[in-house]
Image (cartoon, rainbow, N blue to C red; front, side, top):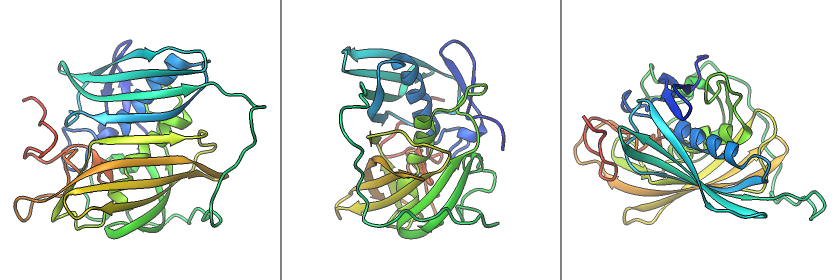
Length: 298
């Protein structure tokens, strides 16, 4: 696949392509591309003011795969730290919002310190097997990314680690930034590290939170994800983020966990769940209404 996740349809308007689609419903978007779109627009607004060190993307509903508009505003101006927000609106409804803290940098301020108990795993060789078994063969999001699993994933319950490389631009004609490439894949963390059977449970991430001490360098980004469950319907996915030279930060996703209401229901939904939750990683859902996200307007 060579098409970008979005085409620019106006000064602040963006049309999603099939690369942005959810695995559960082709009329909805996976959560990764909208996250990257919003962060990219904030990056433009804060250019020259430092580096984004914390980002929270809130998913306010199922995200239709339709043209939307992005608005950016400064919530807290500042010389050393500032807070900015970007909102994605589709059909007059806000469907996602990102808030980012930007901090100034100073090369003489301190030294580089990163903690890891073991060496980073090498990028595995490519295999002919599909990265996500059991998902629709016409699902285009994973084709826009290269996936090399170190362990777990592909339907196996439990922690997973995967090297990823985004193959296409976020917006056509514009080079994706390192932060955007990270956001495209980070939303998939809860999907690759699910602890319960996807055909029996819904996993609905309401947000993606990134804490970064630096941006990734190079094309490859490692997601090392694990999901914890409370036993009463709440979960958290915590992901260590790395590039080829070391750690870059963490990603967290709060999860609503619920049994599926009827047997045989497709896995998915934030999207309705999993993809926007991510299937692996995403937001959207099947035709039925998600327990958390409102369905797109008809």
